[in-house]
Length: 277
Image (tube, rainbow, N blue to C red; front, top):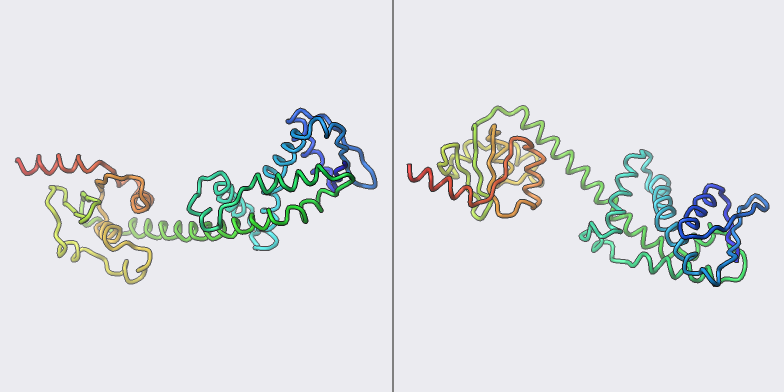
């Protein structure tokens, strides 16, 4: 069979994947098209299949996505497209399981392999662009579902970053109401001053800047983030049994070097030491 490319760029890139799989086929030019003849198809079919799968998976998928982002979704800024493609690739390699569950899990290699097997079994010449458009239609429909989720996630991440930057600016302009605050991030959440004396609800309420909750009721956590921003302490010691949780990640992003995270056992030791004095 023969595989025809309109673009010499595609032809050269595909040849690199053939070479990587130990295949040294060359292409010929005919009527402004670049043609590969699969001379060793019967004895090296698995290698040809692998080369094609890799080429589609590693090159053509991201290229297709980049074009879709620019032409269909109107993302003209390259850096934005790169960030969305990064999220998409994380979904494909299993790093963003929560996003995959929204799009619906697919077996990428199986979808590509089915189309490639049909291609290699064909007796004749096939235009590669037509193969992508028609035989891989189902595959790119699945990629589109992943892409929609990746775009939504990108938008949410942008909104989140704007939110964090806004709170950083607020913190920068807020005078410290406390030098040091200790926070036990368990249920119930407890605040302690620098002398390890527990701060009551009324004391926290008096310090609280109500504008944080009235202006941003959806984003600002009223139990931890709003009180800490209102206090604007120079140093925060946060005690938790689980450091890798969304709230702590947000606190790290907002308070940066002001925040230190320690195990709850450390607070218990400090409380005992202060109670003994």
